[in-house]
Image (tube, rainbow, N blue to C red; front, top):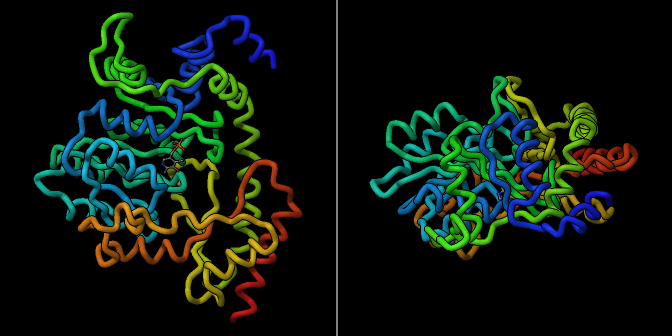
Length: 355
Ligand SMILES: *Cc1c(COP(=O)(O)O)cnc(C)c1O
């Protein structure tokens, strides 16, 4: 509440206000990055990142993501080219990226799905070899570090989402992380209609500005991140201990050279489990437990995109199979242990009944 009163008294409610600048600085410190520009949401940040780099032609991306990843390409008049994912990381497979490159390819748009880092070294090698830009959709990857370096430092730009469902949120919000001050200034102009000063517009920009109320909630939440991550880690550990011996149920492992943010708890329900993924999903739903089938259907299966040459299931066998097996179990800081135990019991019983 003191934050809201401060905004009210200052009468400076948006357009790079005091809280906005504070949050940009504090996020840079917290995340270990140098140049960050806040946005009103992650989708506008993705769209603006592609604009800032003047990406055109074809961009290679993953079908195993939230639909906004591909929409951002479409809104820029870019042709999405889907490539298959790696069965372990569930991120774009570098050899499949390489096989999808054509003379029209200008950039790669990989996603660190479930906050599990992409193969950033291989992706960098491919980008350097073929002269491509790399924009990471890091919507899930808040705070993730790889060998003590922020995952957001890889590629030309990374984009965060601060939507209510994400680990760190400003209700709606997002950010672009870029490599230098000059690029940040350009992004800041683009998110404010292209204005560089009171009377000059240098590009057809958009309104992507984060307002002071959003920024204030960000500042508040940032103070509690340690506790939030600790609570999520405890829930993650309890799931792992309770489910590691279930036949046919695979948990998503993250390599130990990177830190985790416990944003999601995906499991794969494979044929040896005794029930299908949808049967487990329905059994949980019947008990008012909202597990999510992230990401099903694949982006390439939606009517808007299924006509693309790269959208066929023959081109995407791993993504197609995983999309039918994956289930994200509920994980949020306030989850009670008794609720979690019920979820675990329902999942275990589903499998046991069928085996
Ligand atoms: C949440 C999300 C987005 C979109 O972010 P918004 O802030 O909701 O616009 C983009 N990509 C992925 C992978 C996401 O999970």
